[in-house]
Image 1 (cartoon, one colour):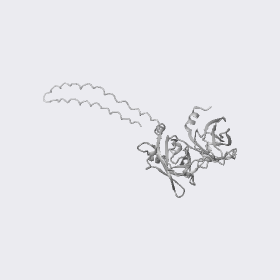
Image 2 (image 1 turned 60 degrees about the vertical axis):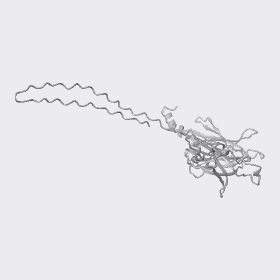
Image 3 (image 1 turned 90 degrees about the horizontal axis):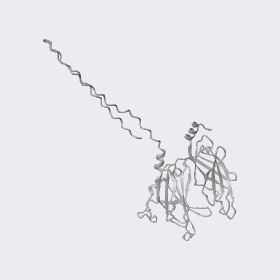
Image 4 (image 1 turned 180 degrees about the horizontal axis):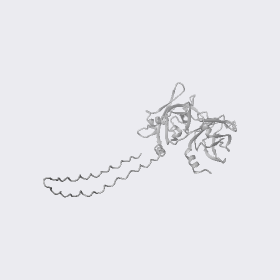
Length: 355
């Protein structure tokens, strides 16, 4: 049984971490006619007594054996004890039960102490699991909606006239070591269009940019393909502040008449070929002030002030002294007593400024 002191110390040392996953070379568990698998991951923590506690599961990434999941898991740990996380990967079969693809047991503390906070581990059943653990702080959310306009068709061979792409976008953030990019958000595709209006996305700022509004972001657009071989349609770079500054809407409030003056240009390849434009229809920060207020330390109580001194006691009037008798040839002059000192005027107490 923990003492009160041990329990209090554990609470003070607790911190939140964010866990993200991707995998490579998963085993083939589907038939030849089904194509690649539709993998997703189930995450559980193991308590000190060995019991498994459900944390959650990722989204399904279709038609791939090398999935990168965008779902993040927030864990709270004191780092004075071990924390093990079990990860099991399954194939989602639309016509049957999920099929196991592999599993692994991860020590969260070991991953958090590594550089660059990522550990790979061979899974039982096949494939390699990559786990990233980083410190997490709640920073509010970004509400983002974008529209593509006049995108270039990727269907090729002149078929673009008849078949239009199914565009979706991904958001990547610069890694802590500034040597790569982390995928943090993937939108649903919009079917059969060169002018997609993507659904509004609500993105956690702690995940998107770790609270750094100027952290470089990479926005990539793809044509979604059923076989999982999605086609690159171009990209641009910005930041949260850049997206906020580029928010532009027509005076008519019609998304089909969005102003292109501040649109981003999609480019592709070494020659930076233009592939269309992306307009920011909405970019709003929600909850940042609330989070900031909740994280500010509670204001200390104002210092106790000394009570104002009471008025000095009233003094008796100076006594009346009778004139001394006159002595012949010598006059004794009467010298009145010195006037009583004026009462001390107390200074007003100092003003208190709340922090």
